Length: 502
Image 1 (cartoon, rainbow, N blue to C red):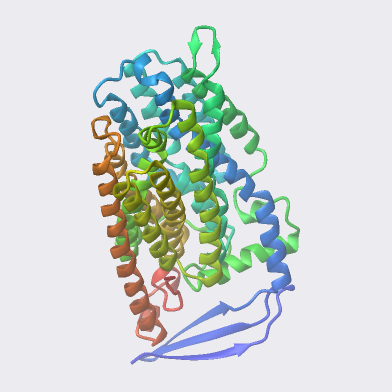
Image 2 (cartoon, rainbow, N blue to C red):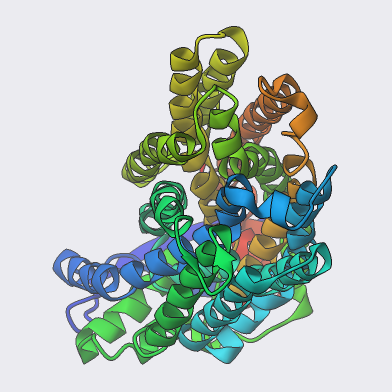
């Protein structure tokens, strides 16, 4: 029979460590002792967080802004003549959208393994430069085959970005600080729809050197992406231990608080010291959180992708002209921008993930019902605001949820990569939800998205129920026997002191 004893010891470690708790487990004469670091000086903690917010988050915001612009600007190019000039009859345009995700999903998991090995501060900007070059080349395509080739390459370079950025943030921020920072860069997704719509409206008016309208959307936006990526290389640190903008005390505090936040899931004092093992891969893939939250992200991302790619088309179907439709994409995306900031802030403030998703999906369902039930353009247009405000906060919430519930680094990297890989398979549905033959009301597409959001509600409820049950067992000491299995450092998220977030 296993039982736990604990005693507190007062120790000092610079200004960061205030208390140490010793936990002892006895069973059949065997004795295991672990030391849990309990607290950090709040002033030091705030100073570290402020510097990370200043030196890391803004650069990630730009990375994701340009990634989403370069991914979805094909929707703007469509209504500016791309389909006509490249003779994309039938479902060719939808196929061109779909092939992007073939290479995108294939690189998700292995790319996450390279983030720490290569160095995130170098790896992420290089990915950006790569897709910027491909995006620029899309302005010079003259055939359907060339467009397909560019979309495949674009997916290859962009595939590792989202998971890599979330994994990167998880090296610097505690679990209950992570989602708001994720939201600070992820809000660039709806902002890209607003900014990209305005930019595309102006670029599409350029007529020069035999390239008229839509090619300049790709050429100019791709060039900007390349320049931004090249600049970012010089500013992003690889890990907290390699940050040049922290003092020595702050650097030690940054490492210390991450070990504190692990609650026994890792024994390494620095993420750079964590080695790869196939044990971590298996733990990630066979965790019920990975399964439920990957399927949940699959359900969430279907309406996100279809909304981002087809919002100009949907608004055009309401009877607005080309330029008006481009401009009218801005306000709904701005609603999504502010909703992401509010939703992720509330999620970290109240230390919950599931409730944010539940509210978001419910709001988005109301928006789709407005599109279906009314024939008044003003009401239908109002529905797009609710859709954007509901779906965009749900995406960072579901990714942050899984990131929070997996540890250590390579388990998190594998699980997050699997989640994004599975979720992006929904693109094969999303790119065919709004077919030309279904316009202008697109009933089929709206119904598919309502079904996906309903599935998300079911999966969210199931995950919250499981997390509450598992945390209860750990709180009652029913998982303490795991400490006797052998190397405590190999328990990861299975450690009895590690708690899932709901």
